[in-house]
Length: 103
Image 1 (cartoon, rainbow, N blue to C red):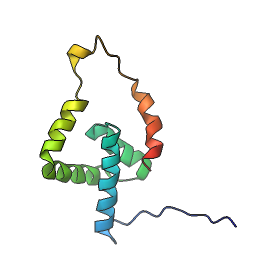
Image 2 (cartoon, one colour; image 1 turned 90 degrees about the vertical axis):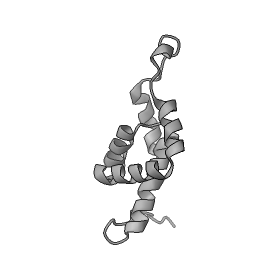
Image 3 (cartoon, rainbow, N blue to C red; image 1 turned 30 degrees about the vertical axis):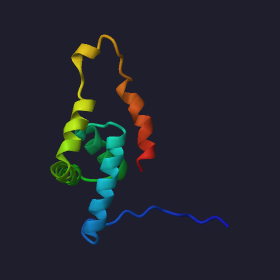
Image 4 (cartoon, rainbow, N blue to C red; image 1 turned 180 degrees about the vertical axis):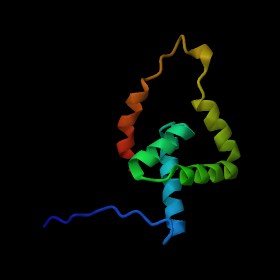
């Protein structure tokens, strides 16, 4: 017998703690894909219907709690002009195929 299992997202107003944890988890998955803050905000808005302000607020709280991690993270994902002539980066649209693994 086939059962249709739908994913129910927690409600921000009914279950704020669960909702914030879900957003935190999705941000962490964006970080694993080396996405910038802007890319993460857009991905969560487009693919999980999470308001940009909510994502930004959770991101900032994570950043406050994990200063060393984010310092290193931003260093890794920041473009390095001196490397650009030696290493070609993948096209931006190529990263979109990974979004299906986020949700």
